[in-house]
Amino acid sequence: MFRSLRVSILVVALAVIGFAALPIFPRTETASVKLHPQVGKGGTLLGESPSELKHPPSHSRMSKSALKSAAMTITIPRLHLKNVPVPTGSSQAELDRIGIMHLAGTGFPWQKGTNTFIIGHRLGYTWTRTTYVFYRLDKMQPGDEIFINDRNGNRYTFRVYDRMTVRPSDYWATYPTGGNTILSLQTCTPIPTFQNRLIVRAQLVGS
Image 1 (cartoon, rainbow, N blue to C red):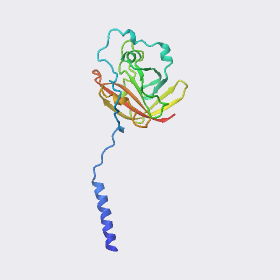
Image 2 (cartoon, rainbow, N blue to C red):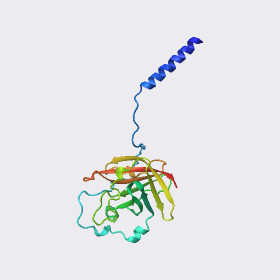
Image 3 (tube, rainbow, N blue to C red):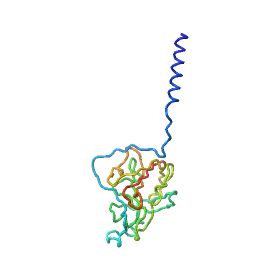
Image 4 (tube, one colour):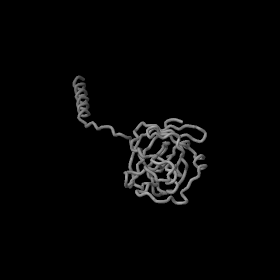
């Protein structure tokens, strides 16, 4: 009996020493979500041209009424943005004109399990309505809050949990992540080449 007790104590002691010898890894700045690329609709993430055009295309105009009827507004304290209208669109011309846009075909905060995908220019053009809207998107930190208000004044609170850089061809970043209701903010990086896309992700924590 005493022998088996000594053996048990020895095994426990060796286990404790073994765990203590394991390396301690620092926690990463952001948590990574498992993304599951889906087969189906593909495309290219919209972006920003490294050289400014001289004249805006005629089809890039969006009326003031379209802005007023935007399904939602966004507030990001870290970026000093407050109640900025976010109209829905799908073209580069619309994005160039407004500066910030909800990508058509992606979800809304009030739809469970969706990925609300919002694109904003890092700089913008001389005719862009909201310039530098996501200029400091790279400064967002885990835990930062983002607020979305719908037309009825309902507020949806998101908390940042991840940040990643992808290629323009990585359209899978617009897809849902598998049950979670998330918000993705996208802009171009790095300045001045704008060859990649910086995406900050936040999860719904209150509504």
